[in-house]
Length: 185
Image (cartoon, rainbow, N blue to C red; front, side):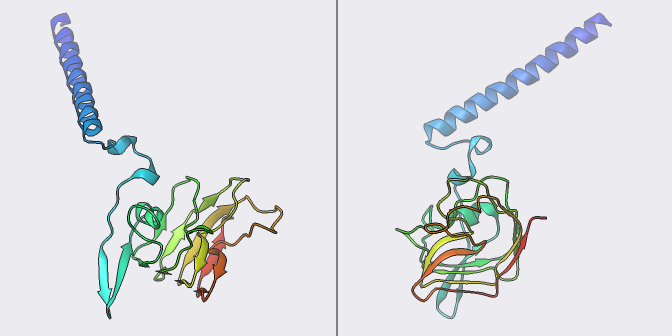
């Protein structure tokens, strides 16, 4: 009996050793290739790809998930492109960084396509701008539904800051329409 218990312990120890060694080799290989293993990556650094759809000569980038939504304005997905949401998106509790800045405003279009974005969180009291989109210029933002958003950074001096769940500052011929918002209860 004691002999069987000892064999089981050795077997379990070997499995653990092989698993740990494999993890170390994988991590080392990723580091050598300049990549971060998926389980150690942060959302903002995740590599992402977006499918495209061509309609009447216009290219739309299809947004299915949080990683793709957060990639707008980064990772080669310009602020001047057309985005078409393709699914409900449940955001993590990570602090949201608005799309577009004063120096680099969003100049494309975003069509929420009747799908929801749930759980947008902005609680940083030092945030300059608060909303899904920060600055937009000659942009179109429509059919966006925000549900259960948590924007608790409000209640400050709004002379240089503005609060809106969808768009904070719209310049030029920016249009924001047919949007629906439902704050967290």
